[in-house]
Image 1 (cartoon, rainbow, N blue to C red):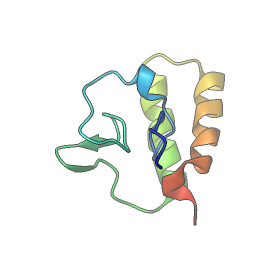
Image 2 (cartoon, helix red, strand yellow):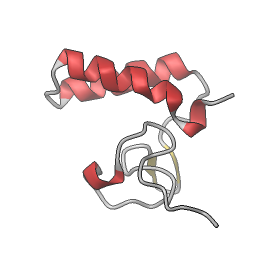
Image 3 (cartoon, rainbow, N blue to C red):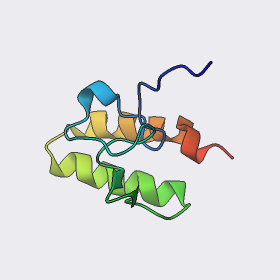
Image 4 (cartoon, one colour):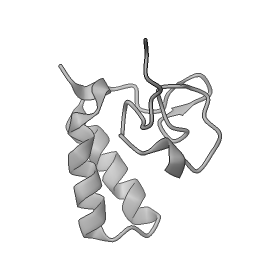
Length: 80
């Protein structure tokens, strides 16, 4: 039996905080748009940099953005 996902498999943002309509059961509206992942690469560090810049651009405090960016490494998409 599958338990429902409560956070994005790519960035771990809780679905309850997702700003837009989701197209996927696994990914938030910021990570998955138009039927595909927005970041197609496999470089975790690059994805974290992009997420950090986006959070800062939306007014997040740098320490909060740093913490959230660190946590991304534990998302299912980045487990190898």
